[in-house]
Image (cartoon, rainbow, N blue to C red; front, side):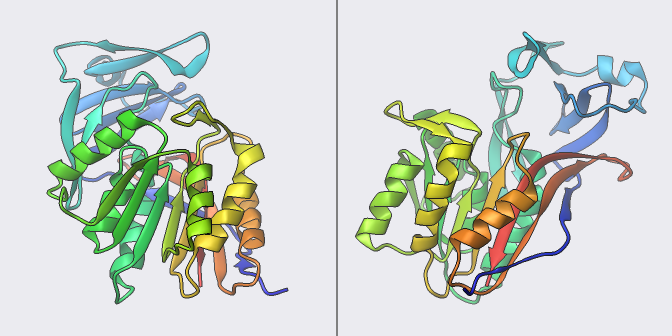
Length: 299
C-alpha cells in the first residue's frame, strides 16, 4: 500500500532566542528565561547539568515558579517585585500576551518557535491561500502565525478561557478581522462532524495534551484517543493538502512513534514524514533542552 515515507533519521528542531524571549541559562533542574523585560525561573527536571551563570543572576529573577507535591506543573508563582499579570510580547509580526498561569508556563510555549517558522514557510510558499485547521489551539499563537502568512484558519480549543485569550492575542496582533473561525469544542467531536459534513483542509495542526477535558466534561487520553482523531484528520485533508503537523509533550511518547502513527493514518498518500524533537537553545547556543516531540507530513 502507498503511504508516506518516514525519514530515516530524527531532526532536532532548535529554537533560539528572539527579541522578546531568551533561555539565559539552565541547570539544577531549572530554566532561567527572559520574557520581554522579565526574568523568570521555572522548573525543568531534565536540566541535570550545572548552571553557568552565577547564583545572583538566578536570585534576581522577577518571578519564580515553586512546584508543589513533586509535580513541576502544579505549584505557585513567587514574585520578587510588582509584576503585571499579563504583558505584550511578539514573535515577528505576531503579537500576544504572556501570562503567569497556574501551570508553570506563560500561556505559550517558546520552543514552538521552530514549528511557527516551518508553518509560516509552508503557507507563504504555497502560492495560494490555504485553509488550516488548528486543533488544541490554546492561546492561538500558531493560528495567528498562519493567518498572518495569509491562511484561512479554524482555531479550536476545549477551553473557553483559552479561546478568549486567543482572540485577545488576535486583537493585539491587528488580526481581529482576519479570516479566523474561533471554536470552543471537543476536538474529536468537531473533527467527526467535519468528516460528516465533507469539509476539507489544506493543512492540519495538532498539539494534544497527554490528558484533558472537553467543554462538556469529555475525557481526552492521548494514547487512547489520538489514533482515532488522526484517522479523522486524514479524512479532512484535501487531496492536494500541504501539510499535517503533530506535536506532543507526553514523556513516554517519541517522535518516531508520532511519525509511525502519521504514516499509517495517511496510508494512500505519498510524501514524507519528518520527525524529531523541539529544543530550546541557551543564549550561548551551546546547550539545549529537548521539550516535545513532533511529526510533520508534507506531500
